Length: 535
Image (cartoon, rainbow, N blue to C red; front, side):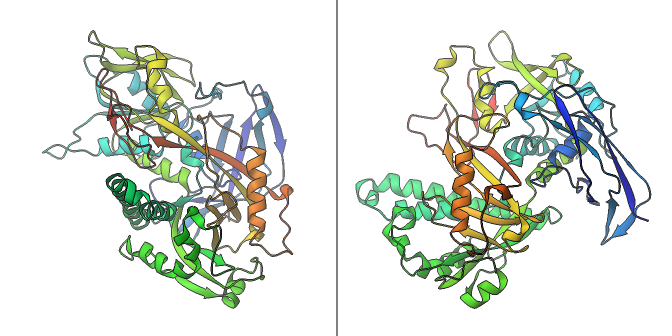
């Protein structure tokens, strides 16, 4: 007898209710993150659903789930939705005009508190513990931001132990919205080891800059290469340790000519990329000690057999390499729940409103508001860490005592848009890379939970909360995708099932000496005046 999953929605002001018939399988993962279930986001991520549980079922609407008997399937329990749910959708047209980097626009409605998973306090219990902190008993570490970085900091701190094996630090972490509601759920779903940055670094190193500015050129190359190498090690770790959240995906690079002009990255060497690609991908494999599936080449015949959607015109051959793939929102939630399991007091829908300063100007805590109840309270901590990603500068303004115009920015944002197309646009187990788009970007074309993700773009600009992808970028991606697909497969705007846009935080240390680099790698910096650390 299959499980029956009943989903009930209580609509609230400013929403509209829509219903449709559907069948879904909700997979309950046996691992401790326990959020393998499907959700109603078309990108397939489970961030909103899992966060609803931690938020007491009170994000945009209240969802109550009840299960009857269950059946096992492949080591996992499954639940079959047999009743059409009533889904409450927020009318985005009525959203307030939120300033860039401003307050999170969604206010959860009041709902019934849902107990946390086994061994993890509920959200109400977490918030209650946060409210009990005071100046005499502060936390050792308070993290502002519950994305992948913030949750990761909280987990790291919570797992530090003393000589007797007990927890060495008391840790708190607050997030103003859902966990993974911003950058950490708006990626290309790849654990990307950075082949583009390896190529761009090589292009910069083999140039006239090596003659005119040899020291700076070598330093820049080393910094970029080091970042790519570290990405490989992180990918290796995640693929080995988080097998329930990750998988390998082969990515095809089709070549229609042996010499490319104008060349990728604007460098003559890459005009020979169709010839160099097999060797380049083997070197790329080697950076992770050949722990990934090996890259290989495919003939035109084999490529069309495995990827029948490819255009047959002028394909010489295809090079194939592997990247890691994961559900970014689930990864974020697994980290946050692991931190809670290890003793961190962590809660979503709790927003920092201001810093608390001592007589010497040092930050000793923050003022916060529970966005579910509206209650304001203080959280005291010996160390405050900002992990707001592209919104870090907005947090820094709350601990900056001088003129806001005098504050040097720490983050230069760059947005990336993605679209989701029906599954028939690509094989279910193979993706494609356009390494030489019309404006020099990389564009991935990847299978994802029965659909196909296309992305990403790269446009500099200030970060926005819950942004829309620009229509021009959607049209650009559709145009680029059509280059490699069969003429029988018409790429239509109406085929776009979903789209999202997220901001990458390109970091620059404002407390570093003049001339510091903007980086896609991490930066850790401390304000010497307030003692606040950001990363």
